[in-house]
Image (cartoon, rainbow, N blue to C red):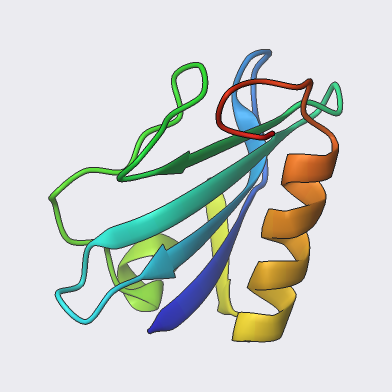
Length: 100
């Protein structure tokens, strides 16, 4: 697995300021966490989605491809960092069938 953090340099309302992605061996996103400027957090995996946050079957662009877009900065992160953010994202969500 690979873990990527993408920061947006200039975002409009309703767009995430940070995106964390767990990339599987096939190059596709397995899980995704999006943080918004207003403090909202949205999570997605193959088993569930929140709002407009989704994972799909298209390969995630490489760090270099993401960095080539002047609106974004991408960096690797560790599995521990991703899991910490993922679990914290669940804790900030209201109770639902997916979050217990």
